[in-house]
Length: 232
Image 1 (cartoon, one colour):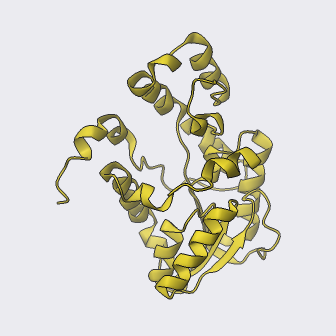
Image 2 (cartoon, one colour):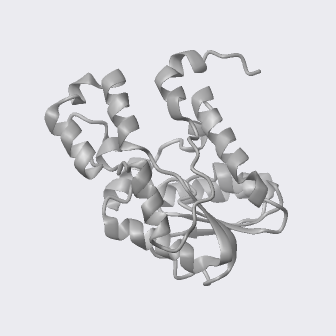
Image 3 (cartoon, helix red, strand yellow):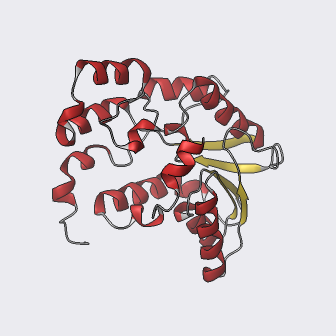
């Protein structure tokens, strides 16, 4: 976990979803997928909230919002943003795998948009989904994000050809990990799933699939074009 904390300390995670159009489209698509559940006074919790790009918006929409974040630096930034914007959020420093400070059966919507692609063991991933199940009300909604290992392989082919080796690609395909000294540290601390695996993970904890959405998908491969679109 310390390696993961180091990865996100001092990082401008908030602007990641605004400084490029491909990331803005990720944000817009995610919000569109969630909009039916983000009604005023609904109780929503985000596990892995980073600097609050999503949680702050949930609060602005009138949701009763709780944000949980692992990295102390990101928690501090989020608290400052809440104060600057005059919003009301419940903020906790904590691990998505264990949130004993959150009451069981207490939330309508649980959003996990970052942790799943950093939890490298099956046990950790199961713990995170189990905690989400515990804190949700009966018939509550869970929204999770992941990064496909097939997408990562394509990204390597396009941007990191030094990683297109039998060793790296076979390890990625078989385990979802990229333990290569030639890879960016983000990939070293990442876990990359398959679509089927994620569906099986949530269903194993009693959830029924409502939607499975690509929030940025192919846009990442054509980012140089997308990022030069006009705002309209």
